[in-house]
Length: 314
Image 1 (cartoon, rainbow, N blue to C red):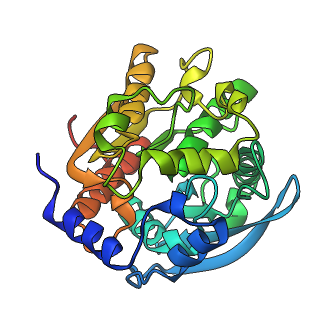
Image 2 (image 1 turned 30 degrees about the vertical axis):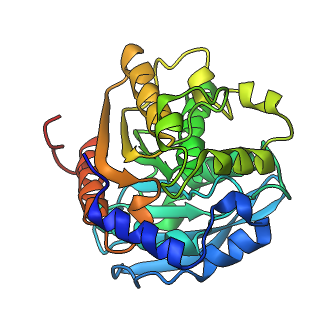
């Protein structure tokens, strides 16, 4: 379908702001620009706490969102997007508030280390450390240690997928569900139709993908590692059920959908939903009706996977 009018308005706003793509900016400029973007205040959540958890290179900041539910709710680890280079807990605060309310779960948002100061595998090391800590300390967070899920958007979706693989290979912690929002799942190649179709003019551009990977990876050889490209893992069998959401006008669309096919072929229950007319990042953009639909879908799927209610039929 044509570009959604709300997405078109957002692109026009970025153009009016003078935004010419991430690749045209320095790292600090990009972080400052998106740190200054005004966001809606977000939904009210009963408990919001800033904490820290131990990591491989010092404490990792986290933010806990816990709705007013009883008994102890499930726990969702959330990893923010930003190409492993920008992004923050603060920037994804509205999404995490909405996810907590729609799922009836506690959400722990993780401020993992970013490149280029901390290159691969720093981000995944922090994501894994936060997950294993949360699994063993869920009761301290007022959550149920037996009901754990991972979630993330873009680069964060990549981290969530990799954590699910690591947990399977390590024999735990048991992860009940993975929610992957327009995830980066295969950085081994640029030969995707969606890269050619959507590589320019739709917020995230092909040159931006190269800019981000250049700040995260030490060399292109790192892209062959399954912790960068989870599509390249030796097996996808035995992974938790998944919801993968993609956007029609997103360079990452095809690799997200291809990852869904890999999971399905390995016998993993998976639902893949392409949001027509949408651009990369739509879940975090103000005033997008499709974002509310996507969050509602995620709430239904997560509640079912975590034993709270039935999911909508596929």
